[in-house]
Image (cartoon, rainbow, N blue to C red; front, side):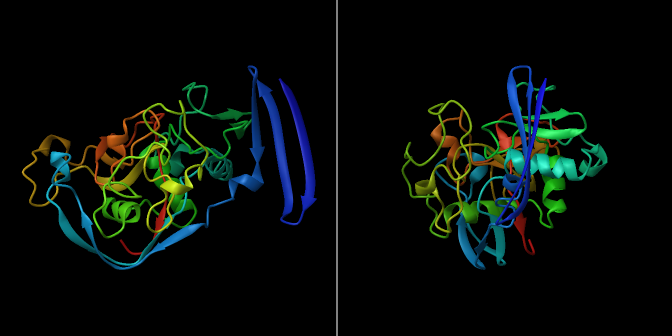
Amino acid sequence: MKRRLRIWIGSLGVVVTVAMLVGGVRFVENQASASRSVSDMVRIPAGEFTMGSDVDDPDAQPVRQVDLHTFAISRYEVTNAQYAHFLNGTDGSTDRCAGHVCLDTKLENPQSHILSRQGRYVVEAGYEEHPVTNVSWYGAQAYCEHVGMRLPTEAEWEKAARGTDGRRYPWGDVADPNRLNAAHRRGETAPVGSYPEGASPYGVHEMAGNVWEWTADWYTAYPGSSYVNAFFGRKYKVVRGGSWNHPDSDARAAHRDLAHPARRIHVVGFRCARGTP
């Protein structure tokens, strides 16, 4: 293993970069990128929006008007650098994640881009600004609480993604391969902010594709829906948004999927929200 430490002082203060080579893969700890967009939030105004879909998935029915308070949501998905910074600040304790494993590192899952080495969490070079994956719902919630936020509710996520007019995607009603990372076109996650033309009406990025995102809610049928999913009640959490290896149709704003909150999945990440749900 080769280890290199570089310290300099710039206009933003002291920046510390630690680089190491492990198994032929270079990992980096960079405090500057870890805090790049923690406070970059988008304000979503109070009011009604059109939620659900009558033409896509049965569990997205019925279409209805939902009234929400003002809230704020992260402009970008939480990155590997940000999550490693969180783990280093809490010693990677499982107690910090409600007794559950926060995240699979590259030792547990080769698809992870975070490694624990000599008591510190470091990020694979080149993946610092990619969205964190292999993180449990408990790990996502713990991160948001650590930075004074929470996970968005399912309704908040959908409003932030599609606005108030019921559009199918953040940009409109038709899938556009140039506006999202999906369907294996890129072959992996993209750095956050890579698809500015795919931003939502409020300016929230990558709410279609890149990675699925944890929400606060348990997976249940919508009120008034004929869809039967009693088996799923309070067992799985809702994930939204589709991912880089799922079809464009999974990235529809109203599309819902589910995952067990303790699982760490290589296509699921998250973003945070703030305000009264």
